[in-house]
Image (cartoon, each protein chain N blue to C red):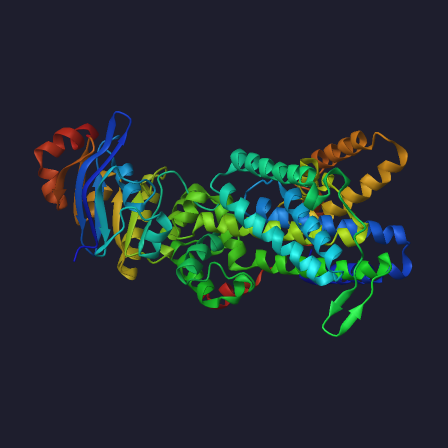
Length: 249
Length: 328
């Protein structure tokens, strides 16, 4: 059974068909890259899959269950989480609290009203273990907004995986990072994915990174899927070279 | 402040408050009741504002629902507990109803809705003469005895009534303090920091906002319910939007980033108003100037500015200690 199946997804903004009939299946395991020129509809597709926007037409099922019109929080509970292109963290909370929120939510403890947060050692330990994986344990008690940009990016990745999703959508997780940090972050994505049995669907611009990370590449252009296949096939595809890779080189 | 110093300061404050009727004048006791009521109202307001990120201009509405309901109950059945509980429950119910309609919006839209709902409650108090007594209000409300099972405690003096108010307010504020330290409190702060991020980690954002709104309304309602037995009357101005500004001002004065901020702010606001009224009939002008000076002079609230003076470097929290143990 596919992890995620999207059929005939459409979303218009006024005259612009941002997503114009997309069919997409994601199988369990590994990392799928979603690439395409600016305005191709990648972020809109992620917004539809995560419930941030509702589609005009089409359906989405996740692990065999229809989720097309479910609100985001209900999708997260079913194992579908995401990160955002624009930094989206909890700026006034500490780095640890940023991770405690999703962990406590997953443990169904987020609405405990009377016991203090540190009365939940299992959540605390899980958050700290993840902080260590992210290389942020030193900064655990710092307000997230005071962390350097690269650390905030890793923290956002941590928030997205802290809810132990089966499928995690990452929208340009390395945007604003230098090439070295970028490689490190995507290495982290690979490691976290393997350790946690999380499948990733990643929007990414850096082609070297994409071809090193993904076992499958989906190319979008003008709201449609242009090509879909293993990295070597995509690299060789003349249509892709024309519309996308050509521009890059 | 270190946790130890904090405990000492808190203990000293409690001793001061408990012993107040012994050494202070009746007027000071009366004034302290007003400080306590505003402190509770402002602390509840700040759960909504400082912790959840929603600025309500309608808290006086829930305060008034509590006060009027309690007064009606006391007039029919002179027993304090049913009056206060009934008033609080009525305020909670109206907060759930109006909150359900308000929390669909945020920022200025939310604020304007709460202002409008608050003023609707004011017009009810003003016009619904059969129930509220109109502009006369409800008069002759008895300071009914506190009846607990077989025990009946008469409350003939302000000093005795003060003890009841103190116990109720301290208990409610302590509960509120537990709430903000809990996972629920953390979830509310997450909603404040980023609505989008919060719903994408699995939090039901709207339900959490409603919950916060209901708790704030309950605090306002409990504070309001404790008023009629003190004053023996309830009149419409307590529901007016200018009364809604009081918890807002108290929270801003004391600081919205600290739990204790609104409590300190309530003290400052009630005391400065009381002092200024002695000197001039244009007290609201002077009070306004004082509030502006304090807000500008103490960025982030009095507590945020004063506390670091008293503070030694903050000791490592338990979290850090635990993380240290685990490190190789």
